[in-house]
Length: 391
Image (cartoon, rainbow, N blue to C red):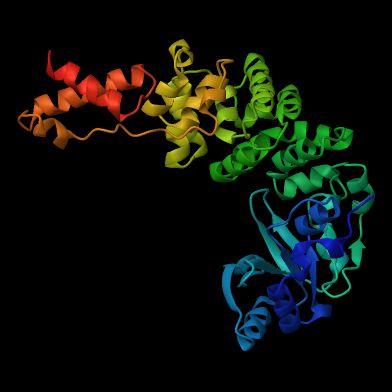
């Protein structure tokens, strides 16, 4: 049974009503993930719009009613309407003219089924009328959604040849919905896995990050390796790393720790900082992601002796990851705020110590003792200072 589309909060957004009035209800349909997730009762943030209107007409009609637009993908027919409730991508109906698996040349169309036919999966090709919310389903997407089946539209190999990233998208959706793998899709993904090498590393990284952020991606990760898909994007991952990923996910659930993509990626890599750095470079991860992945790879058994001391030196997130990856107890870190040393260098100067290296050394010594004692209150810190100055 599906949730009622009319119950979804996004369908009542004033900005979407204004957009509908500007473009005309018969010219647009809400499409894709917003429809799919609303029917499953899942919260929706982003709403996409398909339209018969050309991008130029969309821009002009929005301008006439004061809706700002940004030509975010004009060559593919996409204009982003900036609404009070959040941006909405408005894309003109399309058909593919040519594609090399990385990018497509498209022609604009006027036919809803033709536009639906170029999408990836049946569950993503559901269109809803903006006024009536009546759903148009051209390829059995509702039936597949009810069965939690991820099925390519038409020939799986052809869909993948149009965009090689669909291999990773298939496994991400399969992991999300937990359905049985489709034999035809599986065979196509295995056969064309090597085409992933031709994709931009940023697209691969974004898809891997989204996939690893899901609640339970590990069974699908194992299947991807068996089919030879994982090796194309993360060749460092071997069976024992997948076993570690399983253990980490179980620990997350047992200790009420939220999923984290970099933690899980670290589980799939050997605990060697140089390897983590190389993977981060290859995938062109952000500077913050790279630093995190490298820091987590540098884990060692001593991390488990005092997780809070580790968090003080590194960060809460890095400490949690290093503890979980070594089968430790992260509970002392949950909802714990890393304290600041309640002592300033000026207070040491006030004790008669000349500003300079000795003040810095004294501060470090007090800090080390304070951390070792479990971050006691200021009264104890002053005692530690007295002890250090008496040496």
